[in-house]
Length: 315
Image (cartoon, rainbow, N blue to C red; front, top):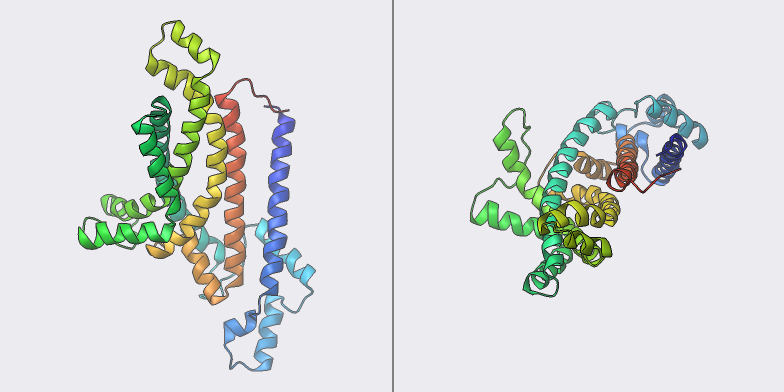
């Protein structure tokens, strides 16, 4: 991978985030909420409202407000929350850490299930195992997060009482307690991804197993296990990386819903509460953080292509 390509991709990430910042700032400016009224309440005097607008720079032209906001954002300052007056950046970074932990658990669970299921279905193409994986995949895709979450809560938290229903416990305080609180939300997020990715792995593995170099590997006397895991899977995973990278968008969106259902104080729940309270600085910062996360993941996906297939050279 050439340095010029890396520079191009980094510039593309920066350009994407700049466009997102323009859209986010513009949309929040069009909202009917008045930041000064949100802070002081409906009964505030005109003089008090004017003083707050002047202090926050809301009386300046929109282009100047955007420039000031972008400059502060580049220095890690997203302003103060209108709900509690606390700095937005530290609050959202703490919430982001919880969301990333949930996303990592869901992603690892998805990969641990989806790849073996896809390989199993491909090796047994047209047999009962293949049909079973297909049926389970369609069922998993058809269930939205809130339905899956409700069913899991009903079974594991209410009927069987095996796992806690809601809440979050830091792993540093109580490791096993934290793990028990993460199981249900992680499974909820992972199930749809498992259904989606397993079908992709199965489709790509079927095509790879029919290629000449796989047949040549068998003729050389290589074991089935080595052919599958060392040769077929390496090439079969290439399109899957793209799907996983694109699914990060769903993963982030699904986390927003799941965090609200399971009362996890992550960035998704912070955004929902901020939208309800019309907390514009937190909304702007939260969307920018999610956009940056999505851009970085897709950049890393390009790097993974080169690692898996040495024939790929970006210029």
